[in-house]
Image 1 (cartoon, helix red, strand yellow):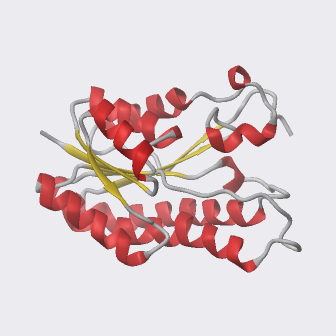
Image 2 (spheres, rainbow, N blue to C red):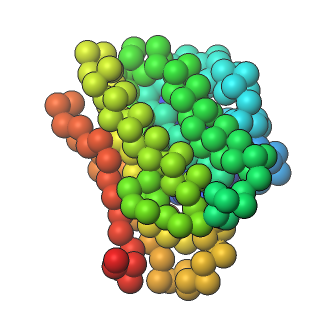
Length: 226
């Protein structure tokens, strides 16, 4: 049976993607920082749970090793773990800057690096949750947007580096999605992009023929026209 590793898999977009992968027949490893919601999600999906702080590079190495030991291989990596902290860069303290850089960028890079030998063996896929904030100016989310822009760039370069091994990578860059992270916006849940929308696009990418690759998908929210 194919297997998938989903970081940030206990809630929000990560959980939606994990549910989609389960319906597609994947064995799952879910990774998240907080054990309680992680165990709840793992019970729902019959998944293997690994609690970890993905802002720590050693922890990133550990979670990929744990998945490999459990399942012996890897077909899909979903990089969904992320942190967004609002605030103008002029007033954002270094701790909050570093947290976003460590989790959103460093964690994703290290997990991906560690997973590549397994993904090369399976000619697998990497799905990375970026953001529309990485494609347009985002006052008040400058650091968050910078990390997401970096992930889009990373995905583009990764595709060129790994083409010879048959590994394909896609960044998905949505606008406001109805998750806990967007409660601060005040936008009604029904007026936001739904987590299932993102999961359906990921499903389509995973079902493409071997010679088709989608580097980045931008999902706009109706009402956010600029």
